[in-house]
Length: 200
Image 1 (cartoon, rainbow, N blue to C red):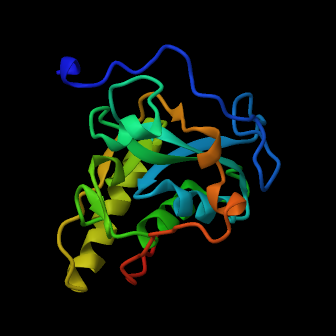
Image 2: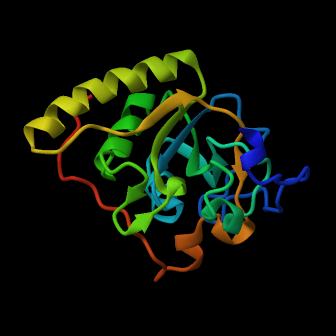
């Protein structure tokens, strides 16, 4: 029930509008030739860097989604009382990179079988998730899960626990989280894949 979650706030947290690394906008309006995708793969610092380094990705941002509390702070999300996951928003150019290629990076760059954790990072905010922006994205994501589960099972891994739903509101994380590993080159990155290739 919503009464079990923190109230959040009516106003969004402050962030700049420009990407620290690639220079594109991290807030709408975005160029007309772009689409958006949203993924949760544990701590969002390293995950965001993976996406901004891809050719065809116009821009990225980190934030919170999949929960209840509006405009939460990082501390509130870490309390487990907002329901949100740490997510990466990727704004990409589909004529240069496909949604399937983004999914391939997603599946290969973390362990999607760990439930409410990713490596040593434990909590609901670190869960694996694909938050689709369209029905087509959701269908493609579900199909890709089935294919990746087969090869993961063959490699001895358990069931994929990735949450796959149509996206709800994306709430921007605080300014210091945006492009964190570019601002802090020696910062923490806990990402670790399974080593199992995903063929899409």
